Length: 65
Image (tube, rainbow, N blue to C red; front, side, top):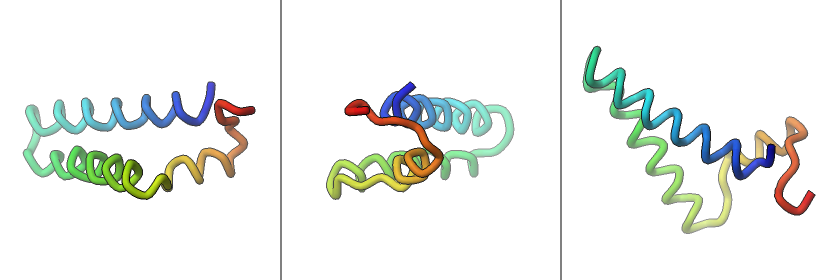
């Protein structure tokens, strides 16, 4: 798997998990959704994502190999 695919999977999982937790437990879990959305927006503007940096340091390869 590539960094990009793992990152998309992580973002999708966190959004869906926080929505389920907000529905069944407390709406405070929606802060995770807000954090993921803010991080995606910041990444689109700056071209840098902290999660991608961490994944690359862990040895996950990007699309370019």
